[in-house]
Length: 442
Ligand SMILES: NC(=O)c1ccc[n+]([C@@H]2O[C@H](COP(=O)([O-])OP(=O)(O)OC[C@H]3O[C@@H](n4cnc5c(N)ncnc54)[C@H](O)[C@@H]3O)[C@@H](O)[C@H]2O)c1
Image (cartoon, rainbow, N blue to C red; front, side):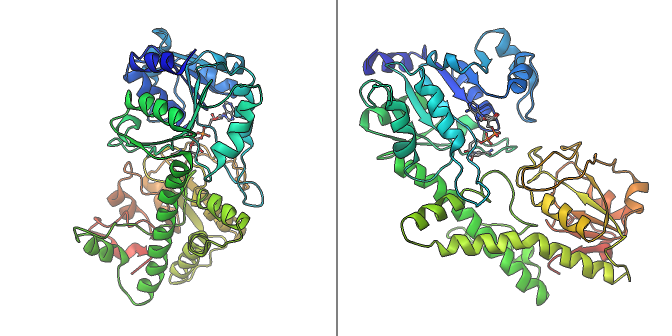
């Protein structure tokens, strides 16, 4: 099949779109392409996920089960764990994890494995797009040679591009199709076809010169966040010492209509992206004999925040003549950010480790995480979320707000708790009982 027949399939939306990795990124992407009128296939090695989808069930809070059931029934969404079927779709979008390994270097094993699976069945006329966040150079240096192993040539027989995912989980204003999509090809023909594909489903496509620009743009976005969050975290500690409320400072500063974007302090960085992606760049810099000092420093400050929170908790308990050892502490929120059920890299797990190591009598509540999940880098106790009832709150020596979920009634929490440590300024509108709140900056 030629370049022009793939173009025709994309133009009239009869192309079949396959998404590999049906997680937080892959499922919303499937939804965007179905909404645009495409038929889709979803590939995941995790048979349990495929079985759930086939049964019309959702494992991601903001993807409704009814939507899944509807498109399983009408055949627009075909989930499978059979990688032998990767030859069926005309476009394959790779959304597999890109974590760090034990030495905090990029772990590209998921991308490599996926490329091998595609290479085994790759046919002329297919367009492959890598969406997983990674360092600039991955598409050309890692994915391209694997796909070309069978003798097909990129840019002529098949097409290869990179387009970073910018999903903002839980943000109803920015669903996948409404976020501008940066697209860069391995060559001009690949870039043009990828631009055409996404143009059929996304509100705006931003074509760039090549895949390296697209890869670097994503890492820049995430590094920018990490560095700015570190800066406000550092300022929080300074302002706290001199009695200035950092949140009020940020609210004032953000009234400037140009040249300032607000970032907020917190108990540390969380999520799959911000704590991890900048280290892809650090690794690349090292490989090229350079250092990325901003990234390293930001990582250092952000990862010291859980210790800082514990330090503040110890001080607050001290005012009640209580040691942390033996104190009953309730941790509110283990998801990495408000209103999501994703616990990955959440600073709450570091807080849990630190609290247990110091002998706190720990329990937790999170309306979106009913049971503590197993985490790769932390030892997590078996624990289920405690109901947030007055007796429970009143029985705690301190309540530590780690995630500012909207489902929480902060007036209720402050009313019934004895001491509240608020790492997110979640209690800012609570009028009575403020003397019980040990905000970390005032
Ligand atoms: N979650 C986000 O908000 C977000 C935002 C932007 C970018 N990203 C990036 O997108 C990528 C995917 O992230 P995610 O959050 O969706 O991860 P995820 O863990 O939610 O989903 C990845 C899925 O890929 C599957 N998988 C792994 N190897 C596979 C293989 N060889 N073949 C088929 N399936 C395989 C896993 O079983 C899992 O279901 C990462 O690179 C991440 O950095 C994530």
